[in-house]
Length: 383
Image 1 (tube, helix red, strand yellow):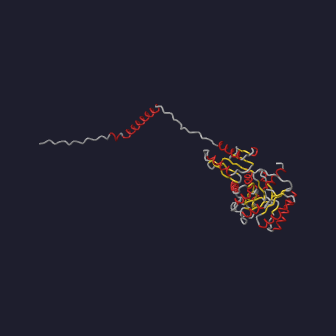
Image 2 (cartoon, rainbow, N blue to C red):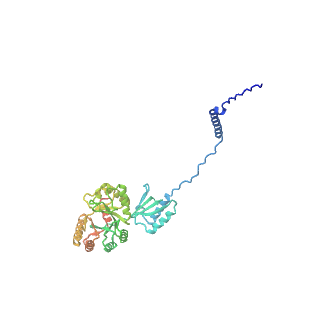
Image 3 (cartoon, helix red, strand yellow):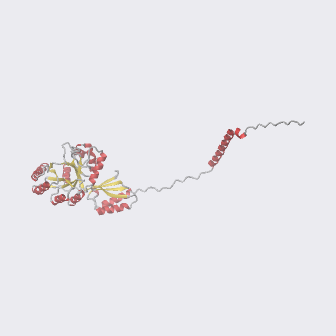
């Protein structure tokens, strides 16, 4: 009989060692990696670092002095007396004010050519009436203003006649120039022939003014135009607009208001206008379109030469009526020593002037540019 065999029990497997100690092994691995990193960093610290050499930059060259040298060369070419040149080089931008004739185009072209030889993108351009601007990369660096020399003052009663609203017609300008009496041209900047009329007048020795449009009381029913100055504008906007208008009329020595009964009553609005005129050595004639004008007071604050209109000659567009106003203006000139009349380019006005002006000289009245009256006024005031 065979002996029964015993069945072996399967051995119990121990839990896998790695699974059992997985967390501990990970922790030990991280710790080992940290130790290795610290050792590596320590050795890195022990190694000397190469010195950091800063990049070599060339110092910027300031060519401003060279530009000023070219400005002085331009003034020297004009034979300008040093006493007639005012330099304000500490101002920003720098300013030169020159009592003398505006440079000829050939001199300006030579000046421009020399500026282009200086590194830095320098250029020159006509900024406004009788002014040049030296620019660097289109930023204004230097302003050069030219003021005509003070004219001689004749003896006896003086009279200035300003013709407003010019610039629409060369024919009217030529008619005025054909008269020997020096009527002053006041030109509206928005007219199609404004520049041509200004050039004609200047070439004929007539004084040129900007007839600047300003807001009237009746606006918008009475419209001075889109380029006019309005009291609602900020000082900066008024200044910008006024300088743009002035730049449109070459050879302007001053300005008077077109309309402006509202604008000239506002002292705040007038300030940027007077500031601009003062910087350029120009004057302002108050057309007196309102009895509440603040022009005189604000002009005096900014030391801008100013006078008021005495008579509007052609409120009635009739030759005989205009002739009577011319004689009334003559009477004011005799009593005051000088007077200003304002008129407009009506056919009746041109006829009345042609008829009446020659007799003024025979009666001892001299017709002069407005600037001569202002010069006489300044001498009388001791300034």
